[in-house]
Length: 432
Image (cartoon, rainbow, N blue to C red; front, side):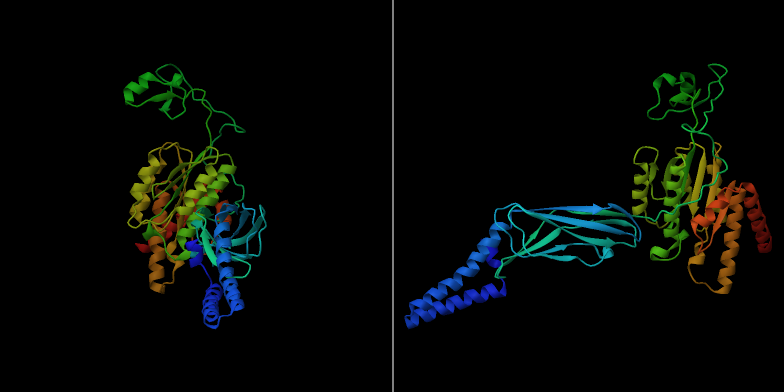
C-alpha cells in the first residue's frame, strides 16, 4: 500500500490537498457538509491506490519472437500476450518494451482495459542492420486507475534474445572440382585392404565402432587408430574465415569483413544443402562441426557473434584447421594477405584437400590516392600469385562484387585459375 501511495499522480495528490483544505475549512466554519466533501475527496485517491496496488501482482506476460533468428536487414515480429489473473478488471495500461539502440526506439502501446481473467495480445516489429544478439525486454507496464489518480510501474523480469544472423545469399549450383562421392545419394568407395598389415587407417573419432580399432597401427603411432575398409567416403568441406582486423577495411555493415561473414554463411549453407559435411573454422577460435542436426543454426549463430581480432596471425588459423583435417574441400575467405602469409596457407593442402581461396582486396573498400592504389594493387597481385603457387585456386574479390556472381568461377576447373595465375605472374614481372 505504501508503494501505491507513492505512485499517486499529480491529480491524485491534488485530490488529497483539496481534501485537507476542505477538512480544515469544515472545522473552522463548522460545516458538516463540507466535511463530507473532504472525506470523499480523500477517499478517491486512497481507493485508487488500493485498487492499483491490488491488481499489480496479478498480471502474467509472455513474449514471442517470430522469427527468433532473423537475417540482417529483415524484420522480426514481437508479440506480447498479457493476461489478467485477478477477478477485477484493470485500468488503462501503458506497455513499454525495452530494446537496445540497434533495434530502434522503445515501442509504447496503450491497453485501455483488461477484464477479469482476460488476455490480450499486442505486437510490434523490430529491424536490425547489424549482426549480433540483442536482448528484448524486460517489459515495463504502467498501471493506472480509471480516473488517473494513481500510477504504478511493474517490470517483468523475462528477457528474450533476438539473433541477427548474416545475410545468406542463394548460390547457383556448380560442380566443385575436388569433391568426391559420399554416402547417401553418392556412390561408395572402399579402401583396398590386402592384409592385416596393409589396412588403411585413420585417427579414431568419437562414435567409431571399437571393433574397427587397428591395434598394430595404434601401437606404432601411439594414438588410437581405426580401419578404413569398406568405409563410405563422404563429401566434406571446411569453410575458413579470416578474422584478422588488419586484413579488413571499411566500417559498419559495408565493411569488407561483413562481406566475408555473409559469404561464409552463404557458402556453408549452400554446401550443406548440396550434401556436404561442413566444418566452420574462424580465427577467433570457433570450430564447429555442422554435420549434426541443427548444424546450420550453430554455424549461423556463431557467425552472428564473430568479430575481428587485433593482431591475429595466419599461422594460428592454419594450425587450428590442421588440428582435424579430413581432406575434401577447403574454402577460405581471406582479407589482405602478404606473400609470406599466402605461402603459409600451403600447409592446408595436405591430405588430398582441394583449396579454393576468395582473396578479398580490402583496400578497395576505402578511398586511396592514385599512387597508393597502384602500390596496393601490386601487393595484392603478388599475394594472389603466391596463393596460387601454394596450391590454392584464388578468386579475387574487389569491392562491389557479389558472391553469387563469383561463385560460378569456383566450378570452372583449373583453366580459369591458370589464367589468373598468368595475369598475376605478369604483374609480378612488372614489379621486378
